[in-house]
Image 1 (cartoon, rainbow, N blue to C red):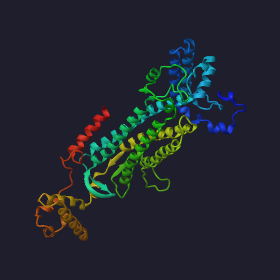
Image 2: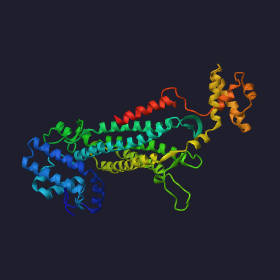
Image 3: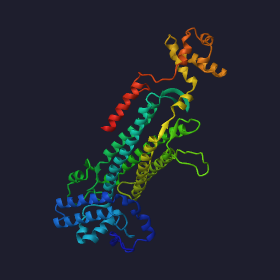
Image 4: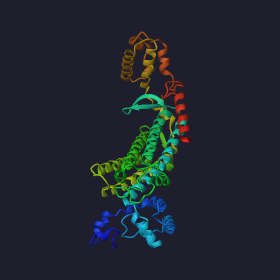
Length: 458
């Protein structure tokens, strides 16, 4: 095995077993385009402060451009002795342009190099996640718009609790995802701090203009402390948390649809293009996408928790433990970017069975109408609540709906009841046109649909 660039200090070659453990090239090659961009800007920064002549700069820039083309065309060859993507690119640059390649690393370290690469990756990939997330929100909005006036059994404790607008319930998931998008925006902003120029930990020995470097790379600002800059992976923790939080919200959405898809609920029908079958039971039609969304949320949580555990006991400065930042981050990004498009198309392939939903509404949900009826006639809420509960018990004992109880039963419970109570209870379920802001009424649902559509277009 060829010697490492740092092995002049050592009298023995690296044991192959140690090399295998130390090597990160199997996963950090994802950073290649970011590393090439960072190296291009670093070369120009060295030229600006007089440490790299114009001819060497031109050779380096051309060499980096050629390496980029090799990656794009799938022609870049990784060697067994390459320790990581940074050294692989440096090795290849030397093969292409010779001696000028040795000048590129002046004043920088792999410590600030990888921290910069990874921040650029995090900012870029967070943008991709946000784009995909918004498409799921759009699908929810479209479904909610179709069902703004559809009565639906809202559940608490997985028991039918109150009739609400189906559109309102779907928008509950949309608002959760919007809050995830807002958090991910903050993650991007927090990551937009440039470590390049921090070197190993004490700051670059090259008099580079770090403000210029940060601007060229698209960061908001350079880092303030070189020790913190090379060791901090707060942005990785933030993004892993943001993705696990998003995964939790997606899992709760998926759980609703999994329940609704069961024969016991029968509230939805999945298009054949987004469902799967059984290898044994010919009648089955399974909601695999929703189940995988629910299942992979655990993977996202595991990646976040695992990395927090890795960094919690590290001393100041860079430590090799930080190599463990990449695999959980790359895996979480890849996982969420696989889930979101599949979830979007599955939502668009979901039809609600409104007749079945209406048939499943419990007749005892109308106890709320009894409470409103009585409080409208001056009965205190708690008294009205108790009377309604007693009437529900009476109807259940007789196996009838509330409106089928004799008028005498109502009037024995309270003199406030008149003949119209049975007509009030017999009225079909509808979503009220007006009501409190943020509630289940049509006016509020339509307003919130408008607000979410405006947010998507902004």
